[in-house]
Image 1 (tube, rainbow, N blue to C red):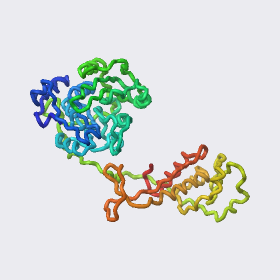
Image 2: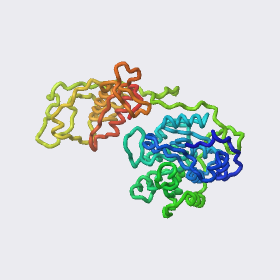
Image 3: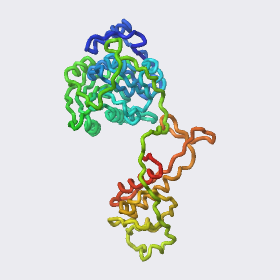
Image 4: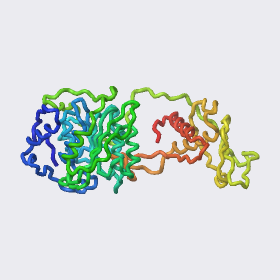
Length: 469
């Protein structure tokens, strides 16, 4: 692996052309680099192959950097940093860094190589869900795995799309995302047309270009590769694809770089609310000052910290209902020989509940089996029952859902740091957890599943359970 800063001292950068900056550091690194010799000493280990940890070659990094048009005002996020070969180029160009790398060994290296920089260890396919809400990068440089998925055995062609979707969601309005992907990940490919349609709902695809696999040959793979550039829409801007999709594959990175210089448009102005954070100045021109904050450790799946903000709880009262003792309590209603039967509350009676506004039916087979008698008492604002906001059938759903949510599944479990791997906990496990029961709502059209779900959420909220999936 190669990283420039520990080997050579920071080089003052006076040129606005990032190519000159890279060459200055490269020549300070070692003479054979300028002669075109291989600069990476790689061994294809199991982890590297499994997670497709192929470093970005310097020429490809230069092409991505040229497309990024990074300025000292930019906060640059790299969601899958690897060993930092893209990140160091962004730093040389003047951007400040936010780094994320899932692999333990590489993340530890990054904390040594980028002292004071934020280094997190999240699954980059979900990066927008995990990063602090205040971290809003204006540039994202990414070389995601083409088909590998964290914590999952096997491969999926959706891996790249997942990484891009989450990264675009995190990007500041007016910001730029540059992605190094497989050449086949293209908007004109029928398999990816729908994916690019979704990606360009909130962003402009302003450039895309493929290059022969020879560019990656010395790094352990001969995959044909592509660089795509997205500009995040601002406000009500219309998104879409403006890139030239008719260009042939470039035989080398030099030709791809020439296309980028000629075709990639200037950056958009950022929305004022998304301007990157201010930073202190650096003694080296073009190289930002190191942050003084302690580097972030590996995140662990834990409960969210309690905030000081006041969370309003509506005034609620127990929903009163009674149990029906026998089927005779239904009065004249009896099962007929029809295929469908009208739905009535069979196990409970809710005084004052409004009937459902439309006719509800169920199969005769379902109607022939009485539901279990619940014991759970929901808490709802009085107006829900008084004003008929939920019908009797919908309130029945709230009762049975609450019956499930108030209990736990059998057993105790240990959850790993990713939150994705769950194993049965031994009896003496200190970090064992239990899982609350869920509820399946399978009603068809006309039952008002939106109202039912809202009632379930409201009951849980009034009971003090503030998280819902």
